[in-house]
Length: 120
Length: 112
Length: 359
Image (cartoon, rainbow over all chains, first blue to last red; front, side, top):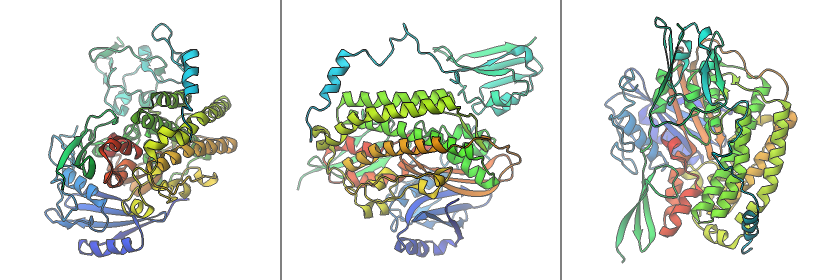
């Protein structure tokens, strides 16, 4: 018995309208996850709708900026600052901006390189 | 709402024996399953190096040519992954802890 | 208008077990705004998953946090099992539930103690931890570790509990449940305790939901969300009482956690009564390929695990979102408008666990 999980692939341009729709349905934000692919970043925005998990998946090319959803879901600012400080992905219009310094790591954006060198 | 309800307990604690042990005069008995430290029966070891590969904290080093099995005691996290995966069952988890130390130390066992 | 000043709170503070820093903007001893900065204990455990064999990584995953360590290992294992479509033997599921609920009791008792310590009730603090010690002894007896169990693995559990251990658990729980009565009465009725908690840091249900709060934080505000109701592990076969309160203040959060200890004792009793015989693990062959989203209820609230694998023995991505991370925005909200003297207790009421927040 596994709770329902829906994964929806979207375009970065749709993000804000989709997220506002979820807000109107009364969803709760669960998390935002960023992962580095070979040539792009993959973002997962997860929301909880009364026990069911809704996951919005989108791909961002390096160098592109995406919009912050913290105007719709305030807690998103922490996740977005985390992604900026670990992956170096730029997110504009965050409710609170830590300037990529949420985590003060010895190496800048430590999760950005895929091969994992210098991480041992 | 009550006032001074817990004073009863405080007085009880004053007149009763302590709940703690007078360490180190009285030592606590370990349970049979307590994961204290890893021990090796070096005579049975075939220096295959599986424990070294399995160790999540890279505490074990095996030198096949020199027949040397080394463990960095301070790095070991007592997870027991090496014990579970040892093909010769020569590794075991003992239920007493390694002694505290001022420096990191490596225990080496050689199976000449 | 009075002058505003900024008071730095932490990273080292007697009330904080782990480092977090808050900049408190103060106006006449009243907090106007709080700005958090974290990152003192970031260890990069998510990245480490990419260079460790997925079977051995469970020993790292459970070290994300020292208090909910078992549930981190369990969440990681569940995510990998979900990808690999492994059917776990029922006994393993029940054993996981027993250990998970014991962890919840131990975590809540630890928190009650810390809370008592935060408002200066030393005796109460010691009595809470005295009870917790009995639970830790159960852990040591059944798993070999007092804090880190290393008992969960991909495909099941590593150690079984025999009849005698189960009997000892029941006996200890009766004992703890009985001794808790005195502590509970003190927490819920003692004048000085009620004075420090009642009406302090109110979070309404709407705020809690929109700020993404989880766990006892959310339930104390009257929202009965509990991931155990989704029926992972053996929870689907057990009756899980969900404790809620409507007040949303610090007292409600204390009350919810207090009652959750009794609820957990009840769940363990059910689990021990129904635990089936049989295997405790399945053989794991091959490597995972695919992705999985797992959520489970930790003592502090809902934890989220996302595992993505590409068919090699190293995972492509392992993501954990721990409950404290989700509760931080709610903490900032409840700090607003409270006096500086209440800040330490308010920070404690979210049950902060910073190391697991930063992983």
